[in-house]
Length: 253
Image (spheres, rainbow, N blue to C red):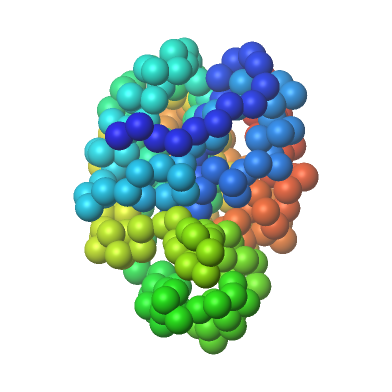
């Protein structure tokens, strides 16, 4: 599948992979700053953003999507940053094509399996009948009854657009992603990799706990961990300056 992408800047290749229900648009601000040092490639994964939809969704398929794009763009030894599901995809890619990635930066995602925890978001999406809406604010009002966090609501609403006059549509293929949730949340297959990796976690998030650190090291012996206070799962949005400092101090070494 040919993925939608955009590039900024010049220099060594730096790739950014968004998380579940996200898109490359979520990373524009950080990409502009990183483009002062690198050629940054922002990507929309399948069933997200401006990339095509499909009835199938798996890490194996997404790895092949990425590899096709990397070959097309002739990316050599890229640094790959992935948030949440994008971080797990980056690790799957590294396992499938060992030695291809120069460095990994995995943002608030471990290697363990995660229990289902998106039920409230999916319930909100089910409750929104786009055919009956005449304004985005109506969708936001429905979301508010299911999703407490203002930040998460705004994150989801970025996927809502006017397909044509008077007709709203989603840029995320929610039905396929919901059906694929077990695959998305499953454990990364155990495989040792010597690719250098920086794990960045928000201390208000429970995605990477202290007891997970030894497991990360068993997968990636050459690993470092950066913990950012006052930030949850969306570390890059909640603590942008400390996050960018951690990324640059690691990647520029």
